Image (tube, rainbow, N blue to C red; front, top):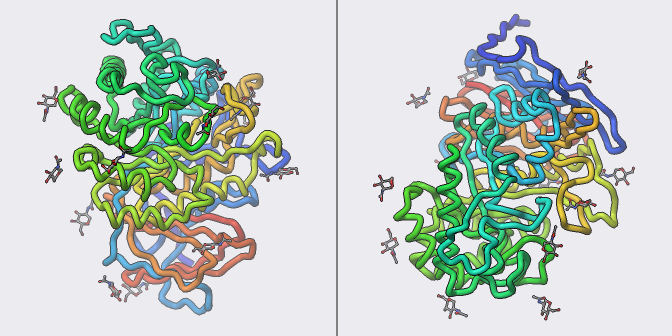
Length: 503
Ligand SMILES: *[C@@H]1O[C@H](CO)[C@@H](O)[C@H](O)[C@H]1NC(C)=O
Ligand SMILES: *[C@@H]1O[C@H](CO)[C@@H](O)[C@H](O)[C@H]1NC(C)=O
Ligand SMILES: *[C@@H]1O[C@H](CO)[C@@H](O)[C@H](O)[C@H]1NC(C)=O
Ligand SMILES: *[C@@H]1O[C@H](CO)[C@@H](O)[C@H](O)[C@H]1NC(C)=O
Ligand SMILES: *[C@@H]1O[C@H](CO)[C@@H](O)[C@H](O)[C@H]1NC(C)=O
Ligand SMILES: *[C@@H]1O[C@H](CO)[C@@H](O)[C@H](O)[C@H]1NC(C)=O
Ligand SMILES: *[C@@H]1O[C@H](CO)[C@@H](O)[C@H](O)[C@H]1NC(C)=O
Ligand SMILES: *[C@@H]1O[C@H](CO)[C@@H](O)[C@H](O)[C@H]1NC(C)=O
Ligand SMILES: *[C@@H]1O[C@H](CO)[C@@H](O)[C@H](O)[C@H]1NC(C)=O
Ligand SMILES: *[C@@H]1O[C@H](CO)[C@@H](O)[C@H](O)[C@H]1NC(C)=O
Ligand SMILES: *[C@@H]1O[C@H](CO)[C@@H](O)[C@H](O)[C@H]1NC(C)=O
Ligand SMILES: *[C@@H]1O[C@H](CO)[C@@H](O)[C@H](O)[C@H]1NC(C)=O
């Protein structure tokens, strides 16, 4: 056996890895953090001398455990083979992240300053999971404590009384600025859930359409939001055409929403919002269309793209996760093949539990596996990044004013004890977000077995990153073959996920 020396190149808080302090709940375990303690992922140099680093998590209380291994050219086992083919490349990665909702930021602020710092470090720092995209709702959503927009003054067509809300100043902006300080590569993406009710056909925060006479006023309203955040030191990397425009079209919606048919969105984008943004100082801010479920890609969005100007204003397409179980992921590749230009970005995922069915299941590894499968499925089909919904909630999924279901979050805060819990969901995302930096390129992998999921990337630093997930309950022996380096032979326990790094 060779001896190895790992070189610790940077670790701000501790020279040693701080490991997970497990706590058991009904459905499994979480990692507990508080004001003085939180598990971190120390930064190690990626080996380039014929060895590799492997990070493993599983339902057996393993969270990002790190081991060092060697390539070999003498594999004897007859396990499944995963072959890396660097000559075939796919999409370039934008990033990973979650949303700074009112609910999330109110929850984070319910902790002591020191615990808040540990929470933000967990998500955004180099020794955390390196989130590099944050989504911010433009005014209220159903994960707010009340209904509001930035101009609830009836008939204020000159937007004279436009103003940000207490939620922005007290919760969202300060935490977004802190996160940006922790990770200067953090980008922000903004989505509006509804126009002010007076601009809508039903004068409400839920359902209703934007009145045509207010198309330009609403576009100007969004530019005013961009101005107001810019003045606070927060530039938006991208803005969407509006959160889930189909909600009120397909049914009567019960959450914050505004309906827009594809023709309306196309007209509004081409004639009002696109030109307004282009001539504003935010002319570098990207426009993402759809911001809705993948099932609308080849219907709503394809038809919207008949309007060539609307298509030209679209830099990217934002998709949500809620019908991923019922719409095959191949629609993503189908869309990419039809429209290779706009990039695809998953900008909202959340495991919902119908209240009638049960409580939130703290610690559930199988809930974490839902994210693992979904991230694989999206990245396998040209999607360039993946974002969670609320970055924090409490154990009752509050505050929100919806009813009937509860949303999971990777971090659950418990302000009574000034602590927070990192769920399996957190480590599920970590296996991707921590190791696949922006501008990494996906490489081809071919598998001899269909009882595994695997993805490979080359980072801008020329590291190879391979993520392998044993999606069976049985253990499996697997050989990962890189013809330039040799074989990596690993034993993967049932339901375990592994990220392998080397140069
Ligand atoms: C959590 O545990 C309860 C009680 O054992 C069970 O009914 C429920 O299905 C579990 N949920 C998950 C997501 O594992
Ligand atoms: C914080 O967590 C650490 C590690 O579990 C523990 O030793 C410490 O007592 C906790 N602090 C408080 C205030 O609970
Ligand atoms: C395995 O073989 C490849 C190709 O000949 C070589 O480049 C690599 O260094 C070898 N790896 C080991 C660990 O011997
Ligand atoms: C990539 O390389 C492999 C051999 O390693 C070869 O079989 C395959 O045809 C190549 N693919 C392309 C698209 O060049
Ligand atoms: C928000 O508005 C909707 C629609 O009018 C209403 O059903 C809901 O109760 C309101 N929520 C709050 C917190 O007032
Ligand atoms: C919404 O409810 C109204 C009143 O009950 C009904 O007329 C309408 O058809 C419903 N719309 C949809 C899309 O279900
Ligand atoms: C919507 O737009 C399409 C394509 O531009 C057009 O053919 C169709 O007539 C429009 N539908 C409506 C209801 O305006
Ligand atoms: C974009 O906005 C900046 C800042 O206002 C301005 O300097 C630049 O000329 C604009 N670019 C275009 C292409 O309009
Ligand atoms: C859209 O962009 C293409 C390519 O840049 C250009 O040829 C076309 O004229 C544009 N269409 C419109 C309607 O502006
Ligand atoms: C919203 O909060 C209530 C408690 O106020 C909770 O019962 C419900 O499950 C939550 N809904 C969601 C979607 O989280
Ligand atoms: C495991 O992943 C493969 C894709 O590699 C997929 O075909 C298979 O359905 C998955 N199995 C389970 C149990 O999810
Ligand atoms: C990565 O590899 C390419 C091609 O071999 C090389 O041009 C580039 O300088 C390398 N980049 C880094 C950061 O090492």
